Length: 368
Image (cartoon, rainbow, N blue to C red):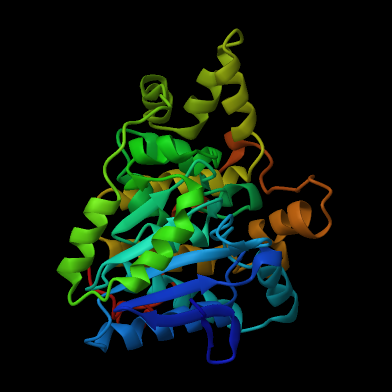
């Protein structure tokens, strides 16, 4: 099934076949990390196909270095974020506004959508996949929202979909950036069906060969092709809820650290001591606020938060995190403040004050 570039964006391939629109993220050397041009190309496809009566569903996949699948999307182009801050590039603002609008479009799409969540599915890849109706995982799926490691928070609607995981799993995934597999994703409500990776190409091709006449036909066919499966991997959610249900981040970490004979507790405590203490506190507040928000309100809140994240430019936490983890790779970020115990509550609350009046918010048009 040949696919054509969308406009001049060779990093996104799109075509319609058999009543289905197919989108392939085609930036394998960067693990399909989203650029602004990719966001625009995906959005263009979705808007055109939404109005096309001959398109009854949309499917997403990623291109790996060896061919289709193997990698879905590792997130946003964080090197661009770093360069844009240094250059004062206004496209940094466009990136987040347009990405969040795209996320909303996928969540509210009126036709069946599928995401082949094979391989790495993180950050911006979760922003795409979590809005789809059919989230398909495989034995190769590696799923996470690891933004706190670089001084950010789980955006792209992360507040919305993580906060709706059972119990306090949302806080756990958001704060630790823990990588989970297919079975855990199904248990946590972050995936719908599991299949073996060697069947993905056959399903992709079969979608384009059916000649669907309606969205109902698509859903009925997929129900038959993708039966429910039992979970293999078990997760101890009781102790996760016990820790991550505590009111304060400081209490979580100190409780874990006191459990000297518990290897899991020590590992998680160590993981929570690595990211930006400020953005960890902000992330905890984000998840708990989002639990009571609709999608559009959550995305507007996250857009506010992202503006605040980069307000200090080269002195910001994400700039320092990207420098340390990705650019210089010294893995020694200089967080401000350096300890969880030293984060002032007023600094956290400042992230939730919108820099825009409601009538001028860049995402004011989104509906819950």
